[in-house]
View 1 (tube, rainbow, N blue to C red):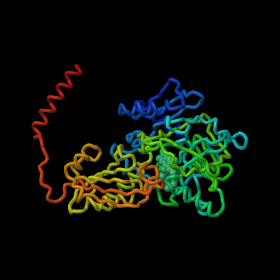
View 2: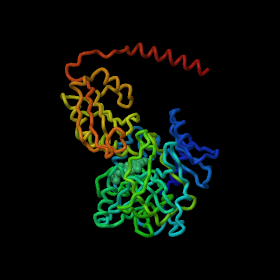
View 3: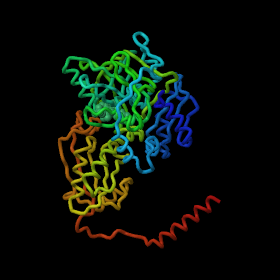
Length: 459
Ligand SMILES: Cc1cc2nc3c(=O)[nH]c(=O)nc-3n(C[C@H](O)[C@H](O)[C@H](O)COP(=O)(O)O)c2cc1C
């Protein structure tokens, strides 16, 4: 049956794009070696999918960096180059009901009771500043007790005992709301944690969608076919039939478990946490399961995974509502907090209107900058040049205070309440300066000279 497994994806991708898969054959320690390889490659501008078949203390392969490259995410979605966001939006809009099956690879091995031992999993320590090893790819599945509608979200988790995890719900999204509903009814919240599944399931899980929209159906849209699911043994939660590992358990709204600090997307080690405990009663695994890790910190993988669905939604909304918006870019340097937009302004004030829309819609943004459409928003230095030369603080800056933002912004308070800043670095009316230019004939001679030199070097 199911071909929706991560291992099916890996086989196909390795075959189609061998140059984009980097297999580290020598044995590595689970203690920071894997993060160190990711960092070294990134410093050389490389973001391949990484496979570690030989890790000390475990007989499982570790796979990581799946989402570190946008080109790879385009390929996962079958998008044409440069059409990542449009393709994501189109496929996500085709959400499909799940297909329930009785079994699948994930039911190969099911451990309950005394056989549950979370310490036997290959747990990675990502940073020296982390309190210990973390599960970073854990996608928590929860269902509304009345409607059965599901929610998927990522939650960093530390193994606290053979049968419990400490986790954090600091983004206070839909899982937080479901937990509060459970608390109000005096119940524990049944959850399942999926560790390793098809990358398109993982991408759908990072979408921040309206309460009641089930990301498992969005995963079906991205896959182009209904997501095949099985029920977990105790609580009947629907999880991908072809997942690698699934932990089933409950969160007791009244129970605390210490966790953190952990290296977060901000580039800081953070102990801001809601300190929840997950009691695990079942471990499900497929035969030959690989261990999927999501690189922590402000890695390309962590930031891409967290924002590609959000970027896609924001770009579609902005372009739909504000005809002047020509391009939108979330720079890596700004983690989740900066966004640049290029506008083709036909009326004064259109840039500011779009900036305010964006600040209102995207819950993570703190600083947004508008530039004219001739400025390449994908290059920090061009945007900063526009800011340097077009912007006057007394008239081009709007600050709004007291908004909910990210609790992981170390400059915000512990709940993440933040102010937000819109910077209008468009030239605006009456701007009077001539941008320097080189004639096209001189440019082509310059190109010829440099190309010749490059040619000689090759010889
Ligand atoms: C790799 C990754 C790790 C994340 N870790 C956490 C976490 O530890 N705690 C948390 O509250 N949110 C975390 N998030 C953010 C939530 O998963 C995200 O906000 C989620 O989409 C919330 O969706 P919901 O509102 O549908 O629950 C993480 C996101 C990603 C992509």
